[in-house]
Image 1: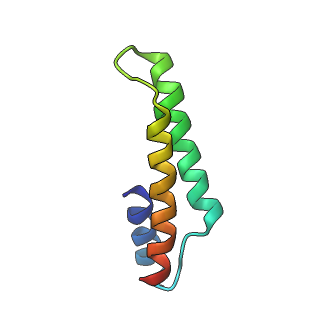
Image 2: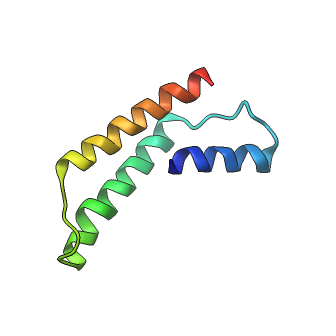
Length: 72
């Protein structure tokens, strides 16, 4: 969702719908979300839990986004 919103924002700003996010950008988003939500927040409060399966889902979501933006 975040990558999609960011991509649409770039399209609006640049007025160029041929722009695509590269794999490095997508993997950076996956890494940042994984570290923040699955490592940092659980250290700050007991209300948050870190889960490796969430990291796997972030990664799979990044892979799906990468291929879907290629066909759109």
